Length: 79
Image (cartoon, rainbow, N blue to C red; front, side, top):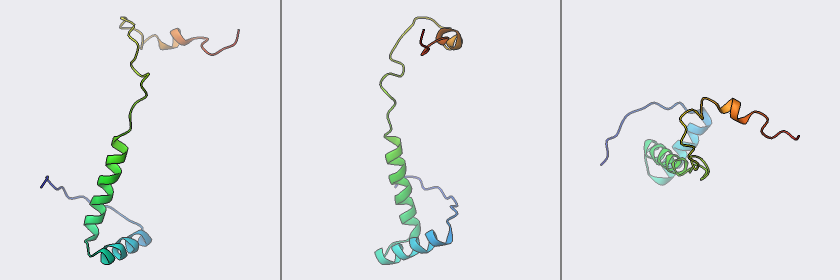
């Protein structure tokens, strides 16, 4: 089993009652349901991928990020 760390989570009273009710109905501990929910949330959020266009270009210049305002001046303006 993976290392388990202890933390404290504050829930509003209604959520806590619902959690306890679900745990009782399923014959499981509330902490088990919380761990499962956090694991699922982290799994879904961890799958986010960056757009494929980020980092696609190579300028061979090391000063692009410092010059961003200068380089983008007028970008998107109609002339």
